[in-house]
Length: 59
Image 1 (cartoon, rainbow, N blue to C red):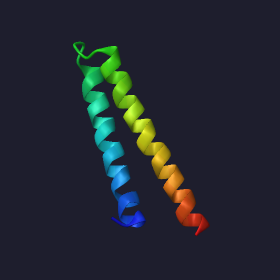
Image 2: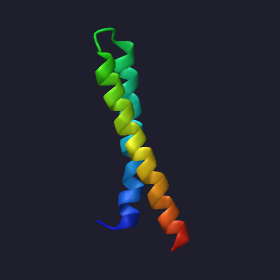
Image 3: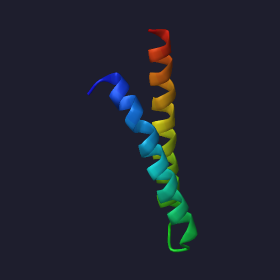
Image 4: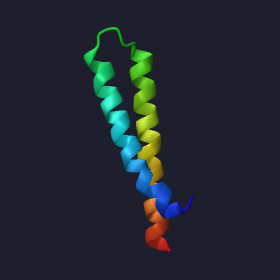
């Protein structure tokens, strides 16, 4: 997969995690650790987007 293709997929993954997080937070049965894990995955994707965008702008 090309760098540009990978970069174009990441915002959709981030948005899906945002929806998953909202769903988890809406249900009291969701554990704090589950919510924290979703937030970690979201942050990891956001960091990857930032890193890849800086690489594409530098190139």
